[in-house]
Image (cartoon, rainbow, N blue to C red; front, top):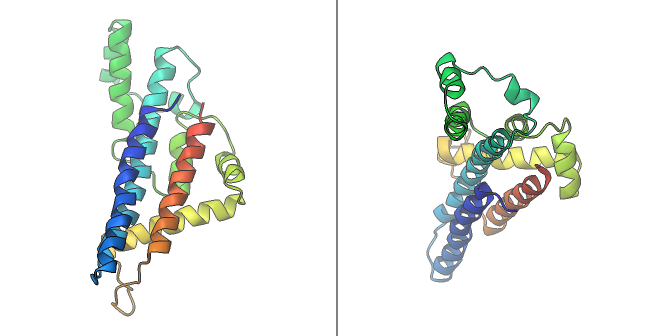
Length: 200
């Protein structure tokens, strides 16, 4: 069954594909609208980040509600005394609500855009020790290549957001092509589809 996190992710990516279509439409009419392609980089990485956060919340809450086996990382997460007391004194239904609220606070200020952070985040819900080996195998890549490709997309996103996509040495705006933006978008889409399939 598709997770709610994946449904939201797909919705976010629709905007990215629309941005590429708008760019192509405007380019045919003589406009330089590569800001739309830069939107694709920023929005697709944000969608990935949001997906991982939502998946952690969704899956861990399901595991807790169904009295499933919680991950080692989650079991080692410190629970504030107040939250622990609320869960212990609540009804079964309210305890689930309190647990979800706690998990939301755990991931709220974390980012899941680079390979290391994504693997660490998935450890809350997936006990697999070799996550990128599993993911990269499905991608048809070596783990190092799979991680490098994702990290490169994240670094370009950082350059756009924090450096106006300008080369720090020349000060010139970096070129952004339809091919690059589409490849980044499709790689993120494929990676999320594989995570969705692998995480129990």
